[in-house]
Image (tube, rainbow, N blue to C red):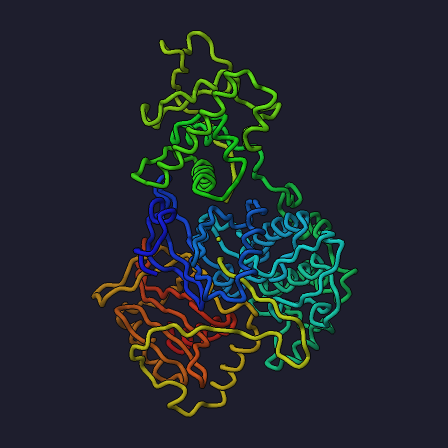
Amino acid sequence: MPDAIYPDELSDIYDIKETIGSGGFAKVKLAVHRPTNEKVAIKMMTKRALAHDLPRVYTEIATMKELCHQNICQLYEVIETTDEIFLILEYAPGGELFDYIVAKDRLEEQEARHFLRQIVAALGYMHEKGYAHRDLKPENLLLDENQDIKLIDFGLVGKPEGGMSEKLETCCGSPAYAAPELISGVPYFGNEADLWSLGVLLYALLCGYLPFDDDDTYNLYKSIQKGQYDTPNFLSKGSVALIGQMLKTDPKQRLTVQKLCVHPWLNKGYANPVHFKTRVKKEEPDVDVIKELALFYGVSPLTLTSLVKEYKFDDLTSAYFLLCKKKSRGESLKLFHTSSKVLRNKRKEMLALEKKLSETVENNEDESFSSDLPSLLVDDEDDVFPDDLLDFRKPRACTLPLEFIISVNEEPSNSDLSSNGLLKPSVPSKEHIVPSSISNYEFGSVKPLSPETKLWSQSLDNNLDRSPWTNSTPRQQSKSASSRRFSEKTTGLFGSIEGGINRFFGAFTPRRSASSHPRKVKALYNVSTTTSKGAQEVVEALQNVLEKRNGLMYKLSGFTIRCKTMDDRGKVILDFELEVCEIQKIEMIGVRRKRLKGDTWAYKKICEEIFNDADL
């Protein structure tokens, strides 16, 4: 999607960078919001390519507009044209929780507890709002820069009219995480199905593999319905007990979110139980952020507050959430002026609105002006802005440095007024409060359960370039029994029915030309350290292993190796990247892993085999 066809609403405000994810009908790009200089992720979709999936996209957008929680990725803005949909989402640089598991093999109890508390908080919030996620798994959990959880992918979300007390009937999600009642094809409660998936997730965190795993789908379903899984010796008694309480085949015997919040295992080492209430006060916009935005747009804080509270998920909503994020890090709230046509038009709209408000006030129509204007101008009893601030609407845009703001916390005294009757600017407050921690950007597909068809299938696109790859394609070579098993497993076993959109990875590395030195990176979870070998030796060791793997093709570019497997029809099954790099500070050579497409657990297995065979 070339820059030339980006709509003004996008290109005027966002500096679009490299692609960080792509799929059959969607592309995710990293971008920078120019007024705040904050990074965002932009998911770009073409309506024609979405076809029958378009209604599901609208459902997810509507859901994300309603959800606002510190452990849920925030939707900032929606831009829709005749042909495309652009979702501006929170950028989570830590990548998927699954990759964290791959790097660590399995997590210690304390670390798993840290993640589970946040997942429970997000899930409890959703259930309270009347939503069931229905596709809970490590791939749908991202990590931000602070290693905090961000729940994503609301394409399969269910919201029955009667809330969590009403049953659902659609069978969807990923097979290995599906509850027994769901795969049995009977009506089920969404919150109970989510708790089963949470039990599978906790098992995967602590063990590094799934509790229910079988190449044969029928056997997989059978083990799930019986609740049969192995219990490793390294699990503590507390962990075994908690997993068992969530993996009850009878949904009525499973733990509820409320009971899970006060469970001893989950609160070990913590002073307080898990609270799933949101810390984001959506109905009470941050005063400091409002002041800065009011000055930026040249309108009064009163008008700006009313406009923000409409949450239209336009450029104003995006700017508000991004400024809140800056404040949460203790950074300056300064906004940068840009020559944006979109922002100029927005300012004109706001000034026109203020003029209408001014005329209404001057005509002393205090009781009727709220009916003349939209609900955005209805003043609450506890509004922090005094009536005197209505004078702030007089022209003042871009006349003061952005480091100064208008004080709105107290009634102005005579000494606070300048010669023209306006409030004098004051230095902004430096107090730090935690505001909204305000995405993946994928939509699961829905398909009714049918014994005649395979419910859990994976639809993977094959939009890779056709440049030469080392090793021949599966069409040109005889496949061994092991490669056939691998192919079947990756296409059928864990495939989520989610239309084949690629998972978003925060740590993106742009394509580089051949260089004599590897790229320097931080010691991230997806970077494995090696022995004392040099960078070129590591590349050669990886090449030697890849040459011997039947059915695996690779392409070397500098210190980056792109690997993929394909089925007999030429469709990509698994696509991942290995980059030999230099780890900063410790001055060691490492290998960065990045899954681009395909089953997560198959990716984990093949990476482990390659690293072991290469003796890294």
